[in-house]
Image (tube, rainbow, N blue to C red; front, side, top):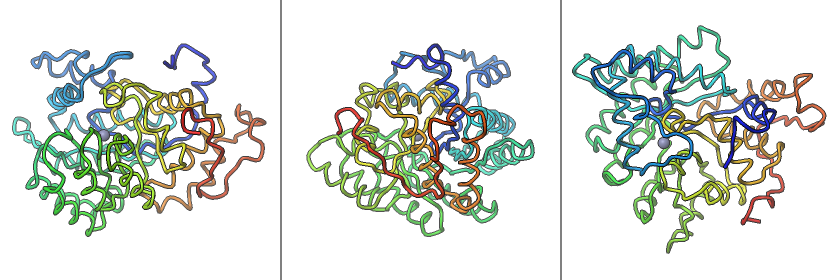
Length: 381
Ligand SMILES: [Zn+2]
């Protein structure tokens, strides 16, 4: 596949310099190997080594094994100090990769051994976001509080309550709710009440759905909530009986998809990059946002994900630029739109930037969707 580091260094520069937004990043899964080493050194008794928390290039795991890896990571992030450190490191790494806007998601966790409560967990993330801002990093960060399916509906209700409190007290930093965790655990209908409650309270909904096959009913229940964005949606267009209704529904409501190529291939819900459902959704010009999911566990970066998408589906630089630019439309902090769009363009067209001359006059005035010729996408012309 793509040898991001080894080949065509100018291309790597292009993807990392491209201003990007990251809308699907789980905090604990995003911890880099550098930060992981620091955590491991602080907790030698756990006897965790770094190969237990990352899936290297070319390697794969089952979805079940991936969820076990997240449990291992959780053992390493058990105190408010750990959470603060990983939040700051993850934000800095995204900023270094050219990410200008980041929505982090994470499930509030209680750890009796350290006295960490769900509240102090959330506060530690917020403190990390605040300190990163004080350090003038060129990135705007928001937080989606996550509901882990494994916790069941009662815990979900508690989490929504907590999310509502922070939604009211953080002036837009906590702005949404995520539903995630092992898709084989629990049923969507069990989470309807808390999810509806969150929606009523004004929280945006980003729901993982259709990550595994044969979940049409489950998927439709979640879609009926009209989520603001869909995580993965891997099997929405799988061609199973009736799945066309799901595609139609998502298209009709123009619900944006958060698509994570490396994550899906390494966790084996998608057999290969060229069979990734990005190809389908992109070819029909449906709102699609390239994301990392868990850049630490899956050993990737957002710039690498853009490069993978571009090289797999033959996107031109201009199409990649549009893909990144259009993703601004789907951020939850929509109050940023008017301030942001001009700067976004300006950053790219700085004198001396290698795009100059290649894309003369290509400077969108407004983050409205710009549809281009997408016939280059293999198999979907
Ligand atoms: Zn995810």
